[in-house]
Image 1 (tube, one colour):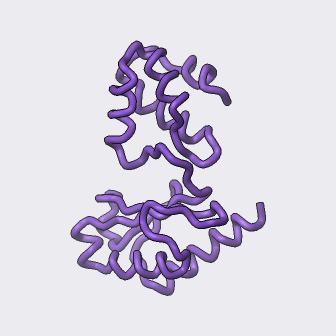
Image 2 (cartoon, rainbow, N blue to C red; image 1 turned 120 degrees about the horizontal axis):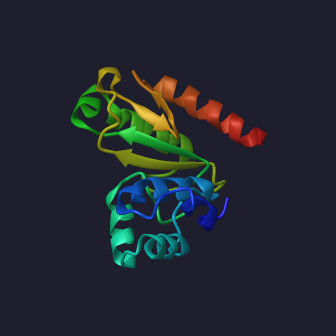
Image 3 (cartoon, one colour; image 1 turned 135 degrees about the vertical axis):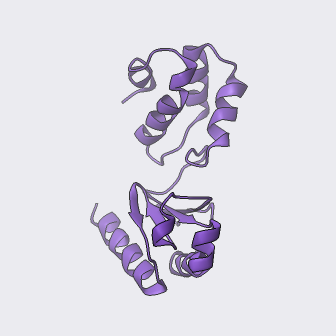
Length: 155
């Protein structure tokens, strides 16, 4: 789906900027927003380019560089940290040989730290794309990552 088709689904109002940016990002392989996306949104919403860029870079769910097919978001909020998110992060870093903000060489995984996933009751927690996982242990994290790796290699 092209940028024009996505933009046409929304009224040209500032209140739609997050919906537009989200849909544009998800429509692009690598799940990121390009300069062309920012320019198109700015023109469509009659906003300065800097305002669109500022909005996108304020929110952690948007990216300006290509990411993997599976985006792993590890919660590092206080409840998750207390329950072991640091160990979860170390496990993922060891399995994938990447640090937060990096993507595996095969383009399958991107690792990100997030402030809160809103599922503190099952801390430590992470999300892979839109799927949430809680009550994590190193063993469970390895199983989850391996299942996504198998899915990715099948495609």
